[in-house]
Amino acid sequence: MSFEIEGRLHKKFETEQKTETFKAREFVIEIQDGNYPQFIKFQLVQDRCAILDGFDEGSEIKVYFDLRGREWNGKYFTNLNAWRIDQKAESAPASGGDDPFAGEVPPFPPAETGSGMSDSPTPDDLDDLPF
Image (cartoon, rainbow, N blue to C red; front, top):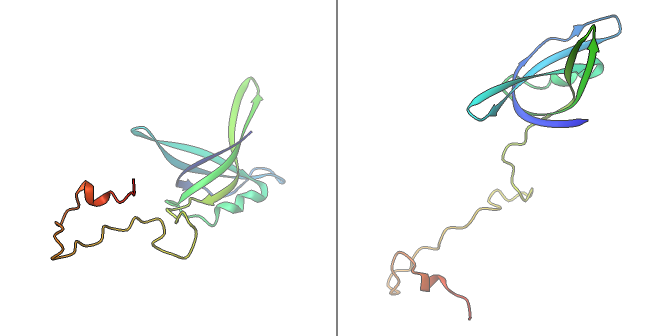
């Protein structure tokens, strides 16, 4: 099963060499759930441990992860195994073009002086439909 979640990188830990052939690294993200923040711990394993290096604590990130569960001596454990981390997209322009004003609504044109128009347009002034 694959999931994704966005949050703020709260804490990242060093990579731990668990055995000669297995290494893991944990990190925690903070998300807002109602009135209370939630701190969720993820795990990176093997060659994926290094993908966290490019992110600083406090960064807004998007984590892609799988749920993993296992039983050991009658106890059950669940891991959130992260396999990809992206920088969370800040408010990027919707058009994706080079126009920095794309998507903005232009203001009303200034009222002409001496034309008999008031400073505030009336509903009749705004109705320019031909029917």
